[in-house]
Length: 435
Image 1 (cartoon, rainbow, N blue to C red):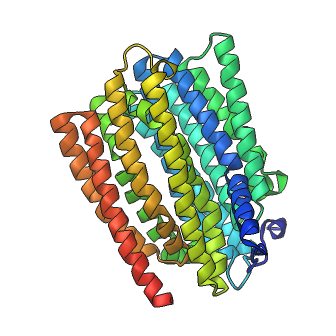
Image 2: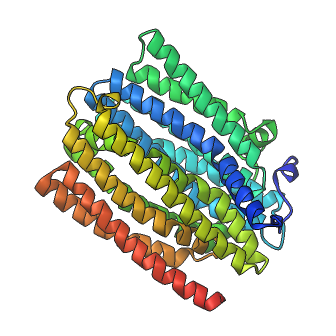
Image 3: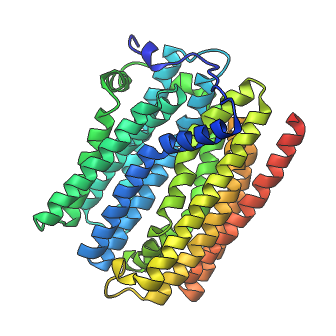
């Protein structure tokens, strides 16, 4: 691939430390602000989108679009598992990533995008979406998987501004498109889905012609066989971990939607809206922190890696505390800002409280999980995720059938607890080996 070289980076780039404690704090705040600028814009756009869907669509259609924002991110998480961590290790190892390796990644990404498209279409039709709507959402999912690979690649080769520009394009086009639909009274499911396709296509273009040309040329260049060692050594365990983690975290979303219907899931989705800022931190920061920890570990700077773990945990808990306080203020004094007729306030409060407990567990265990990923410990992470997913699926199903959608979230919490305990145990073992 003739243009692959500009898309690779020299390995072993270290971050320069600030000369004072105050400088360290300022540097940390600025780094987190910079790394979350793009993701926060997308979270804000999705939050506004969800509020518009909540206000202007019937409850069942709101539940269906909330399901979209569960299914498509799941596809992105799987893409990140296949390519994200492996790209970081390949680009930041002792030997720089070659053009042939990059071509193999891009070939595999095209295959994965096709598989994701078919899967998303099937899940949407199973969730009672019409065939045209399911097809449009599937196209949105395909574009987003390509965009997410481009984003993982940008972080891996230390070109974070590319990812931020794409995030800002996505959010601005989405907000503008939905604003036009609301103003012209055309906010229907089909037009809303088309707006999602438009913003994702523009966001992919935002990564520049070099990436687009390299990704397109993967149709005839690159070798899937060259991806097999990556799959064998890293990707398969990372993918298994993400799939089982998704089943742990969002078992209720799939089970409630497929068993009780999107209208029943709408209530849980309203409660989850309040947790968007905390959820964003847990999903956005790992991309940057994983690369930072990998560089520190490869350089033998274990103290820097552990410091990043501590900082990540503090950031997550602070954001969760602020998010919880804002949710309490809104639900106690201004519930009309979020809820409309048909949603029970007491039920929404109960859902929010359950989400706070779940997010607190995630905020505590995610930094250790990213450290183990940076250290290449994908197999034990996958084992922890599988065990937790079994617990989550079993308890969620039992609680859903016995007590209904709200209580079924207790199954998600049980799975999160199992995962957290196993990750903490594995992290202690890993630290003891590398102390």
